[in-house]
Length: 250
Length: 247
Image (cartoon, rainbow over all chains, first blue to last red; front, side, top):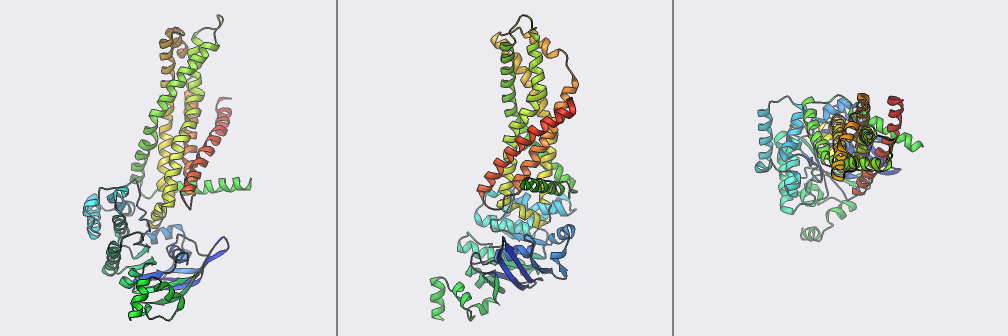
């Protein structure tokens, strides 16, 4: 479980997050949704420690993450996997080398054990034949899948996904969503997904937090989001003509 | 002035992160060998071409300007050798490498920053500064002095070939010149200088590359800043080291 507790963050005097408190539950896909510029990426980066919060705390189970020193932070980060919007695979390394890197850095496994673990992760994301390729040789969907493989190679307890299906066609986006959802349940991971894709929300939104102008505006599930009585949320959810027509049909 | 002090402070803070204990020595060793190839071996061609022509031009210039029956012709070889050893093969080659290697390091790390590859390393728990920068520093500090020696040899050879090609002087006089009054300490001095310059090029360029937060324009700017700053720092340290080591 990850709990952000009354966190605020400002950049050059402009408040981006204002007293936000959210609990992200273990074994569930926790979605952060909101318009572009609403503060959802900053919330995720604060939760993962890429931004330092101005006030408030971030708790990883019973550990206050915001109070940790560099070494303790490094130790907890070995339990964290993150999938970045653009994949963030190392350009100079092949897919296999990218996935292997955390094993090389933080485990004492033999070469055979590492190779087996990499093979397993590649198979898990259906990239068995792409291990030798460089990121520049991969499609958008393959990059995301390779990033997922790298994120899960150390069996993380916490998984962060920053817009995992942005820039993908709808079918590939669903594949990525389902993959993340399966992994979350399979390994009992606390997964936090930052998205503005309503398909993702309706597919895998077990816990949903709606951020509006830097504040937590609404919280619920994919079952309750449709019937929520919240103007800003409804404007966001039913922004497309297709969503509006589906709502009109009931 | 305050901004400069802030930059210097940030540079030393980054160096503090770079020189913290590596997580896995073996990985750093592999990366160092990789960087030696990328930053060192790949610079041999450029160094060779420039050194050859500069050696040849120095010999021609000396030959034209020392045209006197009172000056022994062997001095041309001597002057070419001394120029190559004392200044060209360390300082001028370092300036050239600041352009080639410095901009390459700054743009590589800058691109990794804006495409979140550095964030990805940090999230994994990897000390990104040490992982990315330390191998580059070690590789350049170890390899660039070899480029200096290589440059000296190629430059002197360039001078010799031009004496044969143009007949501007008797090649045997040139050979006698490059053998006369040789002080091994000059080579030590130039290698020390190149070691320091290599550190400046790799660490300063990496510092500028590590900074960008936004877009590709910032990466380009970082690359330019890296080359300019390295060039100025090389000139300043050339003066300081010459004062300390030769006078």
